[in-house]
Image 1 (cartoon, helix red, strand yellow):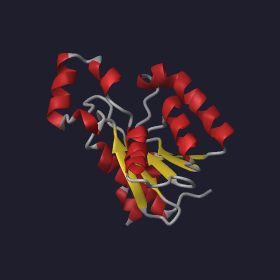
Image 2: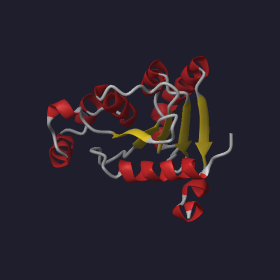
Image 3: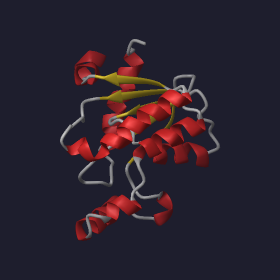
Image 4: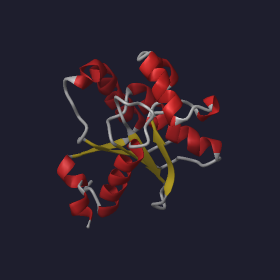
Length: 165
């Protein structure tokens, strides 16, 4: 399937959302769009809202203990899913746009809620940094295949502002 003007627009929005990340080392932004083409939810890597931690407090926790983030931050994809769920919004047939390919845990959550299409920018790919996620990405692809989810990877040049005009 070809990447549309709207696809590029939503990928650019992912870059805007990722700027709100609580993780100083790995910013990720996602946007979930419903079958009508409207934004249903957005998410970034951040602690669950129930913790009541603001951006600065999270940054301080990570500064004090870098491992803290691995146990206390939720991935952008699941934060967006939880946001929609908490508002009673169905994600059946929705498209999730992301600034980074999802891990296997997030892929399973996406399949479980009925997301049918994933569009991911490759702009933030870093093979050396992502080596520890290699197995996650491998199994995420399998999860999407088994779940019947269409996956599209978009090169950086396809998501630049000048292309959207």
